[in-house]
Length: 277
Image (spheres, rainbow, N blue to C red):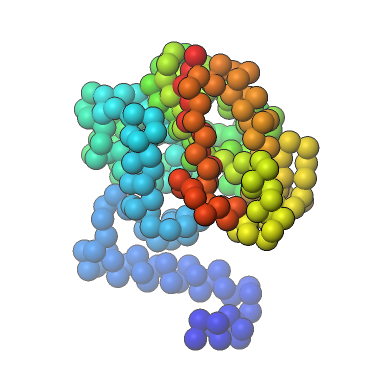
């Protein structure tokens, strides 16, 4: 039935149908009392894939396992989105701990401020007015020039989930510089990537990869030549070089993901966990 509707309905009408579906589903959950107040309505979740709560809890487990995250630490979430990981962290960080998150999408940040911060005073969110061709076309700052709104040497732990998979090299390098600035000495950072190396390139060539990074641009590849930020795969030596340049390559751990068709993996994306030397 779903495929039949797709065939007979004009493409121009599909967004209208989608909005109607989300409207009805959200109100049914609201009227029936089924909605968890810390899970956003479906109309705001459509850019996200997978189970909102489950994925957030999965990342929390990664933080504890790979970076020894403690309940009393100061945490920075770069690109916090609509709070998927923040919600999981509300059940872990103690009152002596602190969470800061920022993102470029006003609707997402406003939801977090309205729904999460009133219940958890040590969780704060800020709007980052950075230009993005898809989510913030009127942004004031270029990502390559943006300064994180926090003091030097402030955080014990900084994490980015699926942020650098959508950023160009100049922008990413500035963010590396800012991560190094706000992170305490011996503080840890957890960042996810798509990394190209001998193994992943071979799997791509064999047609095992879920994403076709066939367009090469020097130190990175993309699935879209006209809009490279759609999904970016970086050369692993290039990425590790940036870690070294900004003093973030202390005790490195690279955990490879399943995205390229590996049979043995840690998560979906590749993850690099290091600390500031």
